[in-house]
Every structure is written in structure tokens, then in C-alpha cells.
Image 1 (cartoon, rainbow, N blue to C red):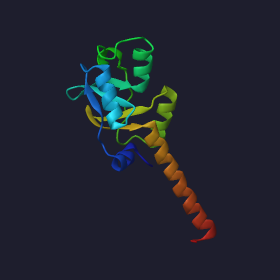
Image 2 (image 1 turned 90 degrees about the horizontal axis):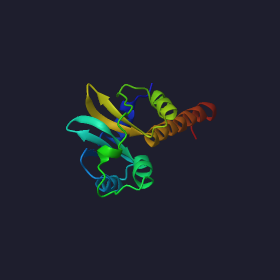
Image 3 (image 1 turned 90 degrees about the vertical axis):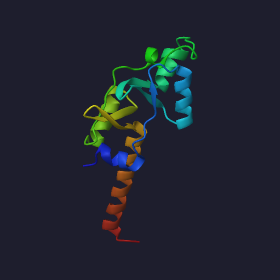
Image 4 (image 1 turned 180 degrees about the vertical axis):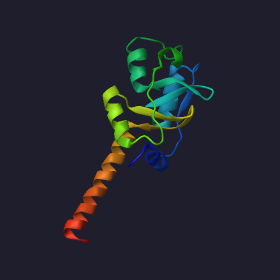
Length: 144
């Protein structure tokens, strides 16, 4: 069974984070520089929420808020789902689909260990399918 840890081992454990008091424009710049769709909002070592591209669009731009004055703590998603390193990848994919999520922080014993995205999950699943097809083809046709 493939787990979240398998994804983290491949992609790494680096997570884009910001403190609660940063402005939306600062968070957006970090997201742009890091080429990510979300940053975790932290208070020290504690996850306070997540600020995503959706939050930026729906809670800031569409609401007409000033990106230079609005703090991420005012517009972040506070209630977030998390997973563990041992969580099966299929379970993460199901959770993400049911809850309409694109990012899952990986947390154990209150400590942030990484974050996976829906893109990570789908790439991992596609890779696994391609590998299975190759093995099946070798079984049927032999090595070419």
C-alpha cells in the first residue's frame, strides 16, 4: 500500500509558510515565487490555517479588499484537514475529492512534516498506473 510518506520522500518536505500578520500581497508574492497554490499560516510551530489561491480570489479580490492592508489571518481558511505520513494515498485522494481540497498538510504529534497537493496525488497515481501497465505488458508480451 502506497502512503503519503512515499510522496514526501519523492517531492521533499519543504512547505511554504507565512505568519498570521503578513499582508495578502506578501503571501501572494511568496506563492508566486515558490510556484505554489497555497501557504500554511503559522503561529510559531502551530498551524493556524491555510491561505490559497481560492481564498485570494473569493475573499479578497471578489470582495474588493485591499491586498496591501488585508492580513492573511483575516481571509485564510481556518478549518483545515490534515493527514499523516502513514495515510494511504487513495484515502487522501478520496478526502480531497469529498471535501473539495487541493492541499493537505502532513502532521504528526502536532508537528508539520510536509504538505501534499492534489497534483502530487494524481501524479503518483498516474505513475503507479503506468508502472502497472508496463509490468502487465511484460507479462503478456515479454521484454521487448
